[in-house]
Length: 329
Image 1 (cartoon, rainbow, N blue to C red):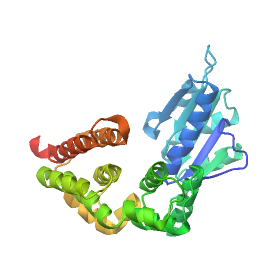
Image 2: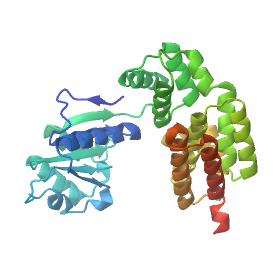
Image 3: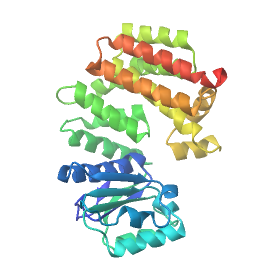
Image 4: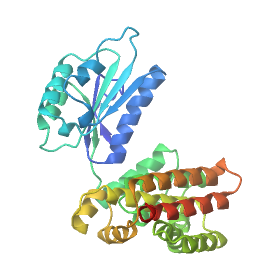
């Protein structure tokens, strides 16, 4: 879980989020934005990458406004800023503007260390967002997620969930949220097993595998079998989401050995090989279309539609078509 400094005011002039765990970095940003909008619903949020923050841009964004509006300026991958832009940021740290919160996301390490040191010297509120590479860290994260939702889970249940989900922290957080929403009382190992292991896991991921491979008929057949044998629709949307996200992650990654990509993307090496085979025919637009389809299906199975089965069938067909988008282009 993200660790914060003692002075934990999200509206501090400067928040420094350090690490490479994307979920925790995003949460650090979300916490600041939520606090700012609680103080002023009209807060202006600017979320910038290094190529968008050119020399002079920060001064423009933080210049006094006639309306004295509250503003949050988020700078991602701050370690990649140009030397001239780093000078601008350091100058700003010496005299931060009122009603403005600057959030710097920094990977840590040697690159851009001068900016990191300057931010700390300026008294930044710091949020540690380290990559969780150890099973024990992911287990502690799982426990903290259940506690944050006001739900109890046995140690065995937490361990079973970590074993079933793996190293993807977003999927782990999503699984905790799903269980907390669906299950009353204490969650034990049997509940996790019913949701995430054995037949249910195999069948839901079979649906996802066939869909991202563009095998429409087989995906629909697997979907109907899963539903007929009692697999919860939310498990199927979760598997579809994981399958499409894996395609998107790997298609955006640089080439390399499976072991190297596995460390970079948080996937086991065997999954890298499988996703490489599945991603043939996919385009960036196809991934975007598929993700929208999954989001719509997820809403449909959670009460947003009249027919969860139809919502799933529609998503499966859309994903399978997206998987063949390159061939149609």
